[in-house]
Image (cartoon, rainbow, N blue to C red):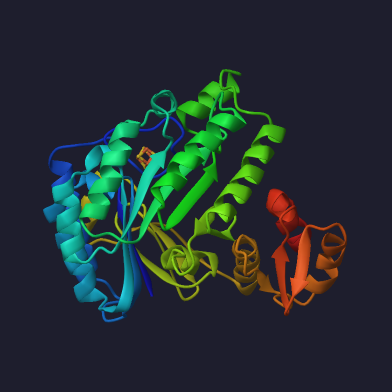
Length: 364
Ligand code: SF4
């Protein structure tokens, strides 16, 4: 199964971020790392092998290397990794150095996902990122020097005031580094963020829809020219370097989660861990239930999620996923948003711009 570990700390909170992350430091960090090890050692899924392990956040590299390694060790004991297991950590360029990357690589991490977001220092400041473009380059070099041969760079487009040319410059900077994988997301404005409050007051000058559309079109062209497969709407990989962990999510497979706010889905049950680090630690230390939300997935929900997530993938979904799918798909095939090939329905290039509409039409 896929194993996810959530590290909920960051040096500061970015203006657009609604992830379960906290700008906290001090004892709570080591306490949470210890609680994570305890939680993993008590896991009811002990013995089930890991096909992928993913440390996300938050900022996993906010933790000292020793803490990261002790958590990874606990995961490996509970979930013996399959051969070729993909073991990823997210990394923030402002929280890493050559020594930390070298320790992580020796301990078994074999993939890094570096949160770049932009190569423009003004844009980075406007996003509240703690790092500069120079630190991105340093982190990337340190990752390569440490022996990481599978590196993702995470960037966002449609930033406030961003032009198509500015986005293309960012993307070209990323492509020049030749990472194996690129995650290229359109900025979305989430409630309970600083950006949302600005947006509501009309103070966030986002690029208009047509500009965002052109940015994505240029993204498809440029990544293709450099040999990347657009295997998911926002994710592009050199052949053989697709993110195996995220493929598990998009294929609606099982995953186990550990840590504050982590979500787990095993069998029909999906549940979310207590989100705040202090409350999470207290619950682990007292041996209490760690769930703050829980649901049992019925077959209709499972089918809907397979459709919604699977359509994001270039491989698409089986055309007989639900009995009425072929009829619902027909008008979307006619208007050029979907194509049917080898028994699978896929978004066309044009359809990629309309993914949410397509999901609604197919499931309404
Ligand atoms: S570094 Fe990532 S997780 Fe942390 S606040 Fe910024 S966007 Fe959120």
